[in-house]
Amino acid sequence: MFTPRRTLLAAALALGLAAPAAAQDRLVIAGRDAAFGQALAAMVSAYQAQHPNLRIERLELPGGPLYERIALNARERTRALDVVMLDDIWAPEFFANGWLADIDALGGVPGAFVRSTDQVARNPFGSGPHFAVPFVGNVAMFAYRADLFAKFGLARPASWTATLAAARTIQEREPGVAGIAFRGIRGNPIVTGFLPILGAFGGAVVDAQGRAALDSPAALKALETFLAMKPLAPRGVETWNATEVRDAMEQGRVAIAIEFWPGWAGTLDDPAKSKVVGEVNLIPPPGETSGPAPMLGAWLLAIAADSPNAARGLDFIRFVVSAANQKRIALETGNPPTLAALYGDADLVRKFRWYPAQLEALEAARPRPRITQWNRVEAILGEQLQIALIGQASPREALAEANRQIARALSR
Image 1 (cartoon, one colour):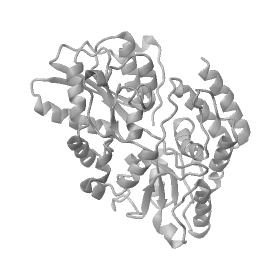
Image 2 (spheres, rainbow, N blue to C red):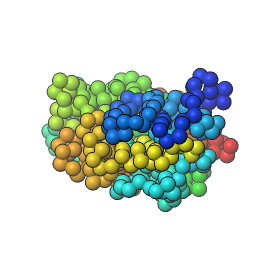
Image 3 (cartoon, one colour):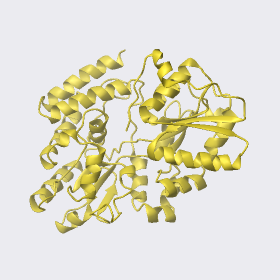
Image 4 (tube, rainbow, N blue to C red):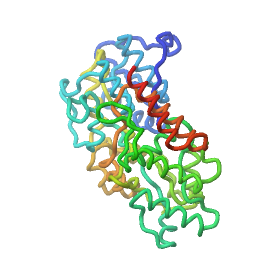
């Protein structure tokens, strides 16, 4: 997952601001690259076929440059963009700055979206008008080797405590298989893996009043549990990112991955690439003192507040998130839908057998704190988590330092 960073206004030259859009005969769309980009590209092509006289320009950018482009255009009021694609954690900043159009005021977008994805598209959070529309139903899952659990008589993990116990059993009794895997690299990866554990223990990075909340017994217990996974993980896990976790699971070298995004699962059942075809189950992360707390990683579509073609942009968004098109792009590109009913669609479940569990995870999903300073907060927490992981600070010391720095960041 990408976390945005602010850039100096002087970056405008490097970013190459687009020219202002003309009226009504042109639609400029700024979106992600990679898998999400493929999904958006398919929709642009389909929409273009229905509107052959419309000139559509699609900017395809990685997460960081995408944030910079749309934020800079918004700050400068260039009127250069119409439809923009947002990571849900960017939404609080865009809402607060008035950078997005009120979609409900424009006419709204119908659809029974999964509640967690719908909440982050509203301002105020959860209850206000829609200033965005859910496009990607991304959520952190938990992966485990069902064959090894059955072999050793282990139940599906219902808690993080049970997860540790199962990982120890398998590591001790199954040669060549590590008990557990996670992303240990500093920054967003290690934070993303830790958040579902923190939430399951009843902890939080920032409380409901917007105050730093890591200096708590719940956070300490969560971090102690997370650090207890390191002896059960492959050597060098401190530097692992998504590729290492996915490959280790596919090649049968680990029994559990505490974080496994749907986008990583496309080749799990491909015999040309995977040694564990049909043997890995994806489920919501377990709970502990409170219920499961999967991390939401939704992506949204919105209309720039200064778009000269807002009506056309709304029509395009309605087209993209319709049930027929969400199903189509899920089948063609693997883009996870945001309409709840599609997770029970027979064609989709046949192709993505974990969809019912993914809906379960989405329904329990928790968004990252709805604060404008999340990029800085995440960087602080990611640094302190890795310091604790490599043994340079105790769990209590790492959390206290993270809490102190986060409190300072939130006060600015």
